[in-house]
Image (cartoon, rainbow, N blue to C red; front, side, top):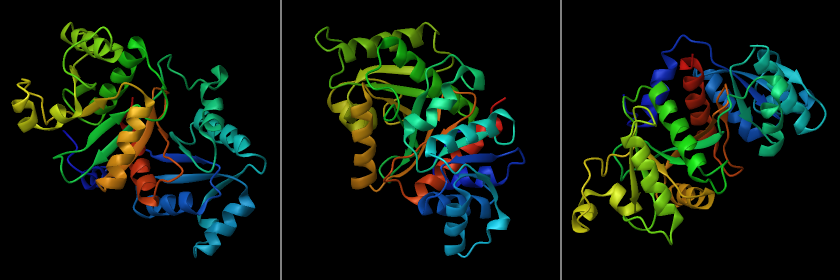
Length: 305
């Protein structure tokens, strides 16, 4: 089942009975708590707020909430201490996904990758940005704008596997991935185009599971049948891709922010590749983006066996 919009996601999550508990690391932030309040009220997920308990309670009171109605884990030290505590809750089975609060990403992920916490899978961790804007007929995933800086061919393969496995978990039968570059033919002077063609060939050999990969191709061709026809590019997947694999973190990050700022896109972002999904949004993300990211991570966590 392809995701047509975020209303579909939220409706599906509300109807689920599986456990969805999020450990929010460094939760003493009004934006973060606002998104968590909505998720709790809508039955999306139950939060455990980890951080300075006094500050968290003060924020809740200022929002007209009774702190005793919330599960608060006191971690009065640094945000990094809150991350350690949040990961302990995951490890103990008290929560089944993690959320970034007011904390640097490196501090959040440090306890996640520690071997003794048993949250690594041996795979690369990558960021998936789910986006919906009016000029595309369904939700489209942009990757990787948050984790892998300059992925080589092997890393790109793992990013595709992460994206495809996540989409299959969500009900997609055969995710369709476009490997973006500035041209449609491999060129040894442009390593991105060579990687894209190599990934397509891996897909054709069945190395990426039930996943279609096409590349290299430019963004306009991937997203428009009319432009593809004008440029005489033939593929049955044009204007129907589920995932755009970007050549590096800069391309993915810039494209995602262009969609949000200029196309008024709605976005939800998670990190996958660990044993639990991680809600990871930028400092400039709205409460709505955080709320939708909680819904997305909650659904992935609930459906992951």
